[in-house]
Structures are given as structure tokens and as C-alpha cells.
Image (cartoon, rainbow, N blue to C red; front, top):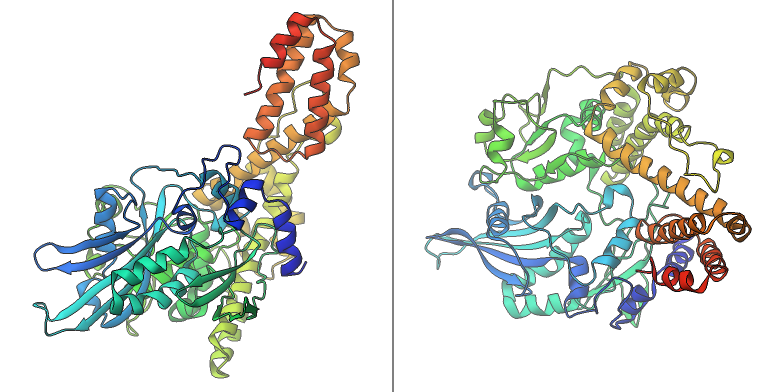
Length: 569
């Protein structure tokens, strides 16, 4: 399917509210409040902050825009400390990096229902996490003799729920340098541009104007084939030239990140897959954040389900929790730059050092389950010798990780699919059958004939790797949505079986009490379908409603009145 066809296909599924939003109208779709000023902005960003250095206060938030944006004191403190590199980093000039921090309180706005709709269409690894914000930073440090400190130090920070790292870094590259020259009026104008953007709909090619520049991009969908990137080409739009066409919204430069630890990439893949505690010690927040994000992405299309902090400081509210020696290190990936962490985290089982040629490497006593794949190392080393472009090296590495993850996950997918009851066991007038329980031993038995050896050349202790994985947060995070999806599929199949039954005939052969009970159950089914977004088509819903109406009309008038009012809200 071409991008254009996919866009049209996606557009056909959009709610009336979403179509109105795209056109600039003020919709009131089911469950949504009317569209308000700054709602379009809020679909992309929570707010924009300017963090400066005050000689008396230290780092301080100088500006929050839009001004009505809400941040708790705890969130402001986190943003202050995470928006500046550690003093030892020596970041002169302009530096870009990313951080992630816990949201202190939950908040919703009038577009939340539409954003939830977008979220459902995203690949699992791009779904927003309700408990965290991302901060995208453009930090400038230049000598300025007119200031007491001798340096101008300021960060422009975009706070968002969206993990679109490459897009937001590109956006900051466009607006931050000019902001430092023109200050707040420029920032207000840029934010007003964002508030005119179309919503971040997965699968649609989006044109985003920002201060005279057009950015063209496409957000991936859960229907895209893993490992493929839709080509976004520069075109003319409304008489204006597309200035920037982004090939990706979220990917980092994998090869650059893994280059210092190239011989350990397979072991790192295992450590991330198993949710092991990992710390990246780097000379700058740019290197630490990119490496952490590369690690998290190396098990794609699986979602990394533990916490990760691309840039972590000693001021972080979780500092004590994550550095205590009284208990085992938690399942988290931290990116740090302060040398103090070399002592504080020296008890951590897996440490990655980058940036220092003498010390770069992976410090761990972990013994990988799988034998090292020498082929990928040779291929990438040959690429270095032949001066293959970094983009091509990253594509090779990304494909390698994808094939490795797919070889690992396909046997699990196949086994979990077998837990689904047969369709012939679904009886319309009985409760839907239950899914079979996941049995570790039954799964292990399937590996002899249908294990990863079918798709991977790698040898080693695959069974040991699976046993370890089944105890991890990543397995739980993968299996729970699968189980929910299959349970919903069973509910949908049960609903279809009900629709194909002659329910009016059934009711005429049963008592009034049984008939009323059936009507109430059917009405609950309709509400459940809507509430849980069950995979049921509109025809089935319509058919079920007709069944309900015909059964009610065959009942005495006093019951009709009661049943027509019951369960409609």
C-alpha cells in the first residue's frame, strides 16, 4: 500500500470529531469537550519552557508558554536540573539532548479522547506513557563578558508526551537559534504556529509550518510492516517548498550510538530484552541520551516496559531510589554524565562507558545465552573500512536487531495464538469460553520443532534465554495486551454468534424473566463493545440493536417502557 493509499485508508476511519479538527472546526465528538484555544498545540506539546541560570537561585524556569500551562513545583524542579548539562560536561556552544521524567499529577484536556484514538493506532513502542513526560532540550553556552558569570547559559525545552525524538530535535534546531536572538515574541509566534497544526494522526502524511519553514513527516502506525520506512519526499505545497522532509520521527543514529561498544551489541540486546539494570556513563547528555534511546529501541518492535532515563542527575527525585545499596538495582536504564555516579553506581551489574577511548566498553559479569554473531561485526567493520555512510550502517544494524527480536518473539506469538479456544466452542447463549492458561513448560516443548532455529542462524541456550525472559517486566508488558486482545476477540466472536441466532424465536419459548435477563445482557454487550473498543463492525452492532428492539416490542407494554429506558447511558 502506498503512503497516499494508506493516508486515505486511515482518513476513512477518522471520527467526525477528528475530521472537524483537521479542518479547523470545533467538534464535540462522543465524550469530548468542545475544541478550545491551544488544544491543537496540546496535541503535540504540553508546554515550552525557557530555563536560565540565576547567580542566586541557580537554574530557574524563566518562561512557561502557553502561560496557562500547568506544571507542579516538583515538575519544574525536575525540568530545571535536567535542562542543563552537568558542569563537568564542558558543553560550549549549542547542545541538543533529551530527558524523561515522572509526571506528578494526572491531567486531561478536551482533546484527550481523540488523542487516545491516535494512540491506539500507534506501534506499541511509540504509545505514550501516561506517567512520564519527555523533555527535548536545546542548550546554549557561550562566553559573554557583560554577564557576572562570564557565560550566557540558557535552554529552550519542549515538554511533550510524544516520544518523537528526531522530529522534536529537528523542530528545536529550527526555532531555538532564532529564539536566542529574538526572545519571547518569537517564541509566542512559534507556539501560535504549532496551535494551527493538524493533529498527530498515525499513517497520515503531515505538513507542519513553523516560522516560514515547512516540515513534512509521517507518524508510523501499528499496521506498518516492522522495519520499513515510508519514503517522504520533498514536494511543493500551496506554492511553498517543503524545507525539511523527515524520513523518521523517532529513530536515533543507531550505528553512532553502538560504535564504541560494537563487539557487545548482541549481549546488550539480551540485557535490554531481559530488563536488566543498565547504566550508560557518557561525557555529555547528548551522548548519554542518544545511547539510552538506542538501547531501548534495539528490541523493537517489542516495547521496553521498564523505566529509562536518557539523562539522569544527582538532583533527580528518584536518585536515592535508584542508587541505594540496600536492595538490588531496579530494572531501569540510566544515562549519566556526572563522574560522581562512577562511585555511586559501581555496584550496578552492567555498566556501559562511552566517550573515553581507554575506558569505553561494557563492564559486566553477565554471560550471554547466545553465541556471538561474528557476521554482523564483520559486515559493520567492512562498512567502516569502505567508508559506508552512517545512515546505511544504522539500517544494517536496525535490520539485524529486528530479525533477532522477531526470531525470538515468533515462537511466543505462535504458542499464545494456540491458547485461543476454537470458534466452534463459542455458543451464543452461553458465556464466551475462557482463554487457556499460559504454561511455561508447554511453551518450552514447542521450541524443539518450532523454535527460533527456524529463522535464526544463531546457536546457544535459547531455552535459558526464554526462561529468563518469562520472568521479566518485558514479557509481562508483551503478554498482558495480547491476552486482552484475545479476550476481546472472543467477546467479539460471541457477539457475532448472538447476532446470527434467532433471538426473538428463543425469547418466545422462554419466560418473561429469562427474556428480560437476555435483553439486559445484550444491552450490556453493546455498552461494553463501545467502552472497550471491541473489534466489532458496525453491521453487527446494528443487527444486535435490531434484535433487542424486536424482543422488547414483543413484550407487554409496561416492560417495554422500562426496558427502552434501561441501559441506554
